[in-house]
Image (tube, rainbow, N blue to C red; front, side, top):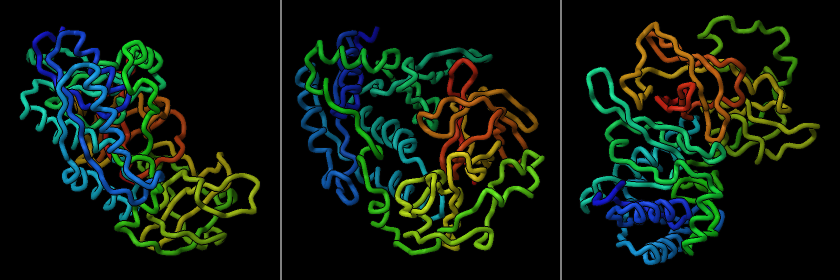
Amino acid sequence: MFEGRKIAVGLSGGVDSSVAALLLKEQGADVFAIFMQNWNDATGTLHGDCEWEEELSVARMVARKIGIPFHFVDLSGEYRKRVVDYMFREYEAGRTPNPDVLCNSEIKFDAFLEHARALGADMVATGHYCRKAETVDSAGNTVYRLLAGTDTNKDQSYFLCQLNQEQLSRALFPIGHLTKPQVREIARKADLPSAEKKDSQGICFVGKVDLPVFLQQQLKAREGDAVEIFADFYKDKPLPDTLEAMAEPVVYSKTDGKVVGRHIGAHFYTIGQRHGLNIGGHKEPLFVIAKDAKENIIYLGEGQSHPGLYRRALGIALEDVHWIRPDLAMETGQEREAMVRIRYRQPLQRARLICREDKMYILFDAPQRGVTAGQFAAWYTLDGELTGSGVIER
């Protein structure tokens, strides 16, 4: 299938990219591996040191076992500028970014892709659990489709929701049709050094981190009040009856509730967070339901069913709407049924995309928990094709 094609595999040292490289080699491709060093600062990592050196060692052994050339590239400067600095800006502004999405669009399928092509690669392959297909538009042009992975428990298409057609044209996802257990079994049979390696966790290329400590590299801790909003607050409040109103988060003031504790800085918290609040005296857990970065206040609600955790709609500024399939882009006044997720691993939710003059609205069939400014909403067709995404405005 790929005989004669020169393909660069982003070999991370994990089992997924290892099997991706193995499968391409078995299919006759001219495969070579590139290991990306994107981070080398241990500040805030839970292990106390960066894991990239261990990953590099495993990746080298995998390449040697498969019998493919191995290259190393240091992209840490680009990663800091295009992903980490973005993280700091977003948190400082009171939003919650998703660096993993930017890591793919800005690093793996941009900076890394450029480096791979400079080494002669026609295409790049990764170990993502997603699939690619092709179709033809009305003008006869090839259009690339991004499909959910076969393994619904591992589908990673959400992380690729900011890719464009040019990037997809150069991308391969060799394991997207497999389940995780199948990938493990292939690795074991081939005796790959990564066969039993645990999946990486945390921020892309940084690892599992203590987020406040990590952010304090640039953002200062600043104590403020934690205010609990009680369920009674909503009793006499009229339900929003317009799309615009449903998409707006409730704005609280300090007098709407009771000060129940202190926090280390509103910018270190995210909507729906329950850990790290250190406030006792409640039957059910407390959750962050809102935050005011300017006044440095976080607002809390008790229990999973607290009304402040849920919204029926969200808005995305039109300049922040990205179409993977430009041929399916919506125009002002159009509406479309879709399946949507607002965070990784969230089950797809039935919704309606509504394009207005000022923004794209997403109206869900059921209220959604923890709608968070700065995160990406990704929308799919009813048969599982990811067609677009956008940054949640507030």
